[in-house]
Length: 441
Image 1 (spheres, rainbow, N blue to C red):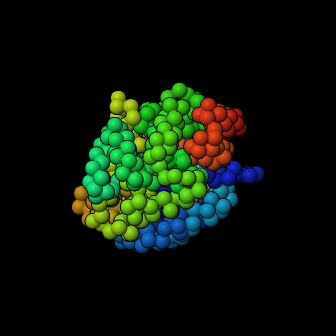
Image 2: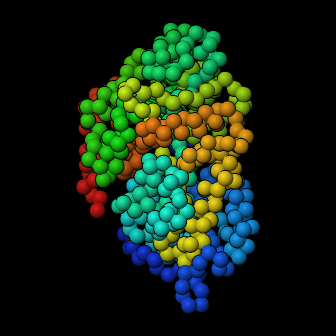
Image 3: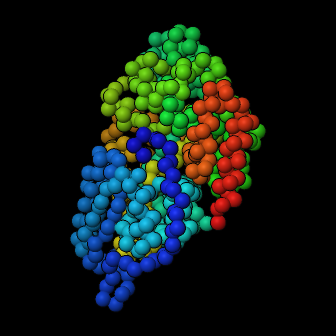
């Protein structure tokens, strides 16, 4: 995603008639699927229609693969995510889909397609290429449905804490290395007349990121996944989750966030941080390219893990995967597609190129040899710390079902604004979650 906008959910596949493995664009003379080494055309659809700057990166990496496989012609097409979600389910069901497609890995997106038999299982290829050894468990789990691995998540996204080191020094605020120092810094900035945390919730979804930081600093990831999954049995009204919600609202009550935040857009809140009118920003790694482009690679902005409220927890973070490489169930070139995915995602050449373009790896790649600004390297360190600790959890209220997302958008402003208490808000989320779970096959 270009800037950590939460997972956009694909509409329910209205009247979707599933005919998995219908037809196919290419076959050899005997009607058999083509193997690696055969002449073929590999069709790829990417959601980089939303991020044109990444298109030449993908094309360059793919061209390197083609040089090793001159018998294959790779045809890459770019769509916006909105256009992709409108067209892909239909093309998959008709058997005319691209061989490889780039889709968000969540239950309400890729999971719907996979459980309807429209996506090629990848367990055989994962074993052949060693993908499961290269990917952290939390990443593998994100693309696993009904105990089957279906896609390779292509980028990591995590919510952490941006802060302006120069502004902190000017006002004597302590570096936010743990939760007590985070609160102390917020109090210091507030008392100096500086907004401690830039926050705008006019767009509704940013409230989920603010609360997600508190939830993932308070509740173990496995318990969070149980809440944020249709197959889980967790609820938002669980005492630990409610306490985290209340912690986030405590930041509002303490005067730590932008005044009148429900009338402030996300873009304006980020601008306030970039112009020194706020000392901190609780957001995801997706805003880093904008920060670097606007402030330059040598700015005083730093990015650190959001500190654990519960000090007994290992470091973890809210977040997800920005898209994933999957293979159509009807593709007659699945073997070729898997080799292409292996190269464009896991090769040393590809991992370095993606990181230098601002895309954080889903593997354990440490950035060795990559030429990147300090802020981007800090992003990588935050993601690695979470994956090495408790893991990267979920986008709060945006991972399981559009019903839950709608309930959040309808209540998040009222909750943080003080017009809805925590029991009523979490109760409304639980009602939406229960409805979504009751309609899940």
